[in-house]
Image (cartoon, rainbow, N blue to C red; front, side):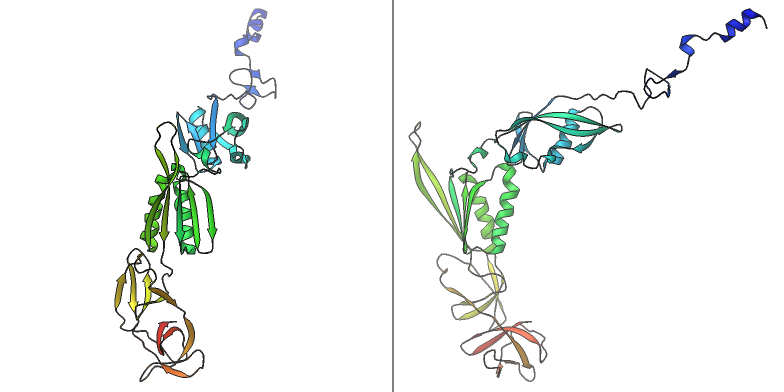
Length: 338
């Protein structure tokens, strides 16, 4: 081989030289750094958000509800970051964030992109959405008064208000005392739907009483506060009541109440209204034991433990020695079941 050939063959153009990463020394296929050391960049829009303690946020010119701060953070990433990322730590890391109205702060959220963590700033303002600024104050437009409130009716009202809070069906005060609950509404128009649902599900009746509150200084019109009374029956499913001279076992306490006549075993229906609200008395139930079933049904009288004849219009299948519940009235005994 000639010297000239050796020189040509040993010379390699710069473009054909193997490149190495200046950080880790690994071979580089393209660019200056290897894939692991190459700087990752995110393309995103600046995020500005307003949050309301009622779990609403301001977006695209309107207030919308959100379930929790974690899901809201994930939604913000999908809407404002072009690359597909994974949320590591979102706004939920600041557990008391919604308890700080007036806060204006740049809050960092952490996300994962191609194996690396990035910090994304979110300009956050905690404020009140329209109508909600009245919550927590002394302002109210009406009171829904729930009377003879059971644990079930209380829980129903609580869930109803919670489910509607995204639509600003809000109360700023609840006064719970004995068998009564008063709900102070910031919007009186939202009271009647709850009142109707309570009566539909638990029976009872509604009465309304608007009261003059003040006068509009600009229009000179009278401003009224609305009071709605929802009186539920003082009894519920499984109770025995006296209706006139008849003992009724209540099976369903709804707008139309369904029961069974303990004397005849027949079904009966009625309503709880202002006209008959003083006509019902709940009869106490007692526990005892079946004494014999043939030829007639006898049970042990709870106070003396002496056998007494009992009615059995419910058609129950009983055996001697069985523990049962019963009610008594005017020396008559009625078996309710085990």
